[in-house]
Length: 377
Image 1 (cartoon, rainbow, N blue to C red):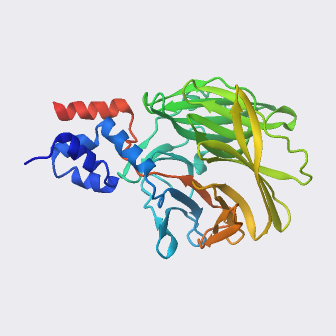
Image 2: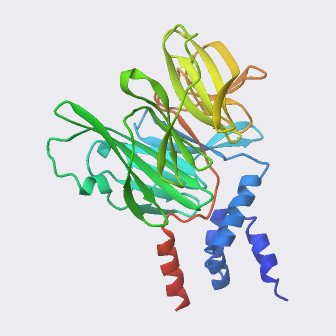
Image 3: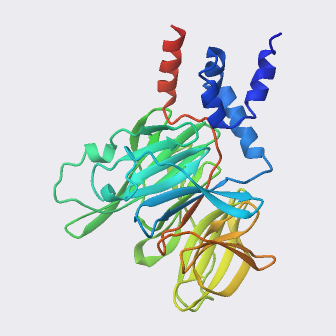
């Protein structure tokens, strides 16, 4: 007696993505099922809702022996925390110069640092769970550059997903100069359309190149004319840049670094001193009310010894930090307890990204539809 289709789908949706990929060669019906958009969404939502959060943090660092970038999943076992290394497809991703732009619903976006200041950088999407990757098409800004005097001063990226339009987008912000004049241009890649499009922007310089994706928006720390520091936002639905003010930091007497982070669907600002042996860390939460933005200071941490810099916020309110020995530190602001996870990484090379295993394809939807039509024919 065969199971009803809905029951089969429900059972399969609770299995790991790697198992489902193996099962796709067993029956044609299962292969078609795991490529169905509704099943992919069901599988993703169940993984996001799981109480067991082990394997939900990606740790990227540069190995102090090989000097290559390493990406691992942080797992929580019976004997404590451990790292499970992901096998990066070396034929496509340069492990020496690759930059992990961001992670969204199981997709990882990479850009090559070696070519970041060139007109033709390589950017790709990779889903390690299903071992699929796609190299993005050439950028628009590259194709319209005809002036040899124009120099690229810097490039920043962002990657995320907008749930309302169900589209994954990559943003590329290029800082340019020519004979003393400086300006920026920006372009956005849509996975649905599988193409780049240049978008309007205003004058700013990205200060902290790491990007935070939250609720369909991307955020960077930037500064404008006169050195004024603020937050640049990008709405992935309307492809529009915006500006948010930072909290008043005038009470801080020593020079500070700023970093954005996500915690429980809210945007957080982490501020810390970069000089001296001790680190003092201040954490603010952004609150939106009646179309206005307010900042509430949540924690004041430290002074702490042996800490190089904070990296971000965890799923349960912990603060991820990097020690001066290149270790990953999980700090609990409530109990003031710190857990050190040994990592053989170079100093200032650690990054943390949220991750969830999924069946989401790296290909544009029109490519998936074409493959589906071929199978039907």
